[in-house]
Each structure stands twice: as structure tokens, then as C-alpha cells.
Length: 345
Image (cartoon, rainbow, N blue to C red; front, side, top):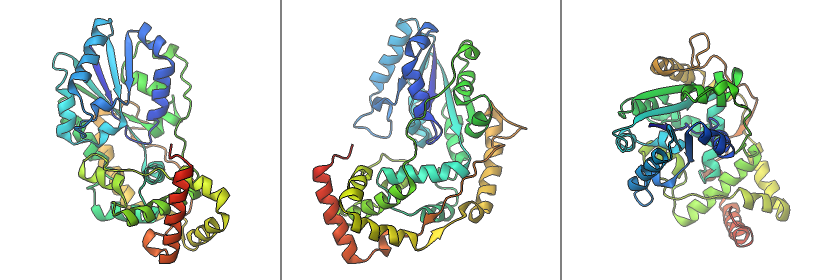
């Protein structure tokens, strides 16, 4: 049997693909394929939930049911160390193990990834996030896709396929690119329209939510950028906040406070971040194109990134340390009250 590890990266349509797998599970099983979406038991970096026996048992069940292929779709695997990915691959010594990795150009990835991190409780501004990626000079996976590619290459898997998210969207579509990469039977006969899931929250909502997360982190002595840091250290996320719902509630119930915060966010903005990052992105592109080339299944003119996303956005420079102490105190008290009334999820 074939084991397929669909490992992300983040913000490359993973949830939309998983939605299609779930909605079309019967169609897949008629083709002797099965998919398991985001199983906690495969989270190798978290010993409290990782269960290798359960993972192997799912493969054995699939084989007993006559499946030719089993997909484990979990974008978090792309954040694991090479050793942790190898541990998963080694669970299947008698099967062919393939890894599918989807990569998105930084023009669209970075704003979306930063927004995702803020949704989960990170507090740094987008300009600060970019500055940190440049300061770390390739140590962080958000800037260094070669690091992710090498983890997959040296995992011991039998095959690695890399999909260009950008080329797929400009061409055959993400689903068909994935089905071709995995050699799904007769992919051209399948309805390939994907529904969109996890669409990005409004920018101003995220900007406000990250400041509330920062106020809470300060008051409770927690890391201000736990998700960003976890991907730097290749460790499990220690804690997360989900304050977008609370911010929506406060926009209705505390309009004066919200207007004060919005006014501070509007003072100084970064309007053209891609020009600011042009030299760094060019460097990242060069090394990534070379590393991905042997495994790329949908090049356009020989490139991983033939098309880049262009969207005008301006991001606030305001960080938690810039807020007045009295305002932070008010925000924290208001947030605690909102959390009693509105569940996080």
C-alpha cells in the first residue's frame, strides 16, 4: 500500500483540500483511496497526543479494507524537525511512503501566515514579523523553504512531490495538481472545484486582536509570539489565544475603546511591504527554486514561482510596547469581561 503524507505548508489550501477529501470520501474509497485529516495522533512534536500505534493501526485497517493508498493530511508536519518526520516515515517499513509539499510565494504567504499566527495569539506587528525573519537570516521556516524541503528529502520517504500553489491556481487548479502529484486514478474525470475554508479574517480585526493578545500575554507572563517561536524551535505550541470573537463583541459593546485603538493603529502604516522586502525575497526565491526543482510537479517556464500575488495592503507598525499603560490596563480588564460572556470558539 502507498502512504501519502500531505504536510502543507500552511496557507496553501490545505483545509480546502481536506474539505474535498471529506466531502468525497465515498468517491475516494471506490478508487481504493482513503484520507485522514489532521489526526492529533500524528503530531510527533507533542508526546501527550502522539500515538504511533494508532497511526500504524489506521494503515493496517486501510490495507485490510482493500485500500491502495492512505493519505494523512496534516500541514503541521511541515514544521517538524527532520528526525520527527523520519520517525513517522519509519512507521511504515513495508509500504511506499510519499510526501507531498505545497509551497506558496512569499507575496501571498507572508501576510496570510502572519494573520494566522495573530489569530492564534501572536502579538507582533507585520513589519516586526518581517524584520524578525530578516534578522534570523534563514533560521525560521517562514523565510526558508529549503529547510522544509530538506526535512522531507532526508526523512527516508520513497518519493517527494512539490506543488507550486501559485502555478496551480494560475493553471489546472490546486486539487487537480494534488491528484496528479499523488497519482490518483483518473484525476481528469473528477469535479475539481474546491470550496474555500479558513478565509483570512479582516485585516483590522486581526490588528486589534493581536494587541488584545499582547495585553493578555503581558499580564499573565506568557510568550508574546508563541506560534512564531514554536516554528523557530521546532517545538509544540505551548499556548494559544483566540480573541477574534471577543474583538467582534467589543466592536459592538465598547465602540469608544475600539475607536481609540483603531486611531493608534492608523498613525503609521507600512504601505508597500513587497518593495521593502524585495532583496530578501529575491534571495529566498533563488535558493528555493534550486532546491525544489528536482521534485516540482507543476513548473511554469521551469519555475516554482512563475506568478506572484499582488495585493495592496498597509500594515500598522504599532506594537504592544507602544501602547500607553493606562490603555493596556483598560484593554485587559475589558477583555476579561468579554471572555466571560463570549466563548473563544
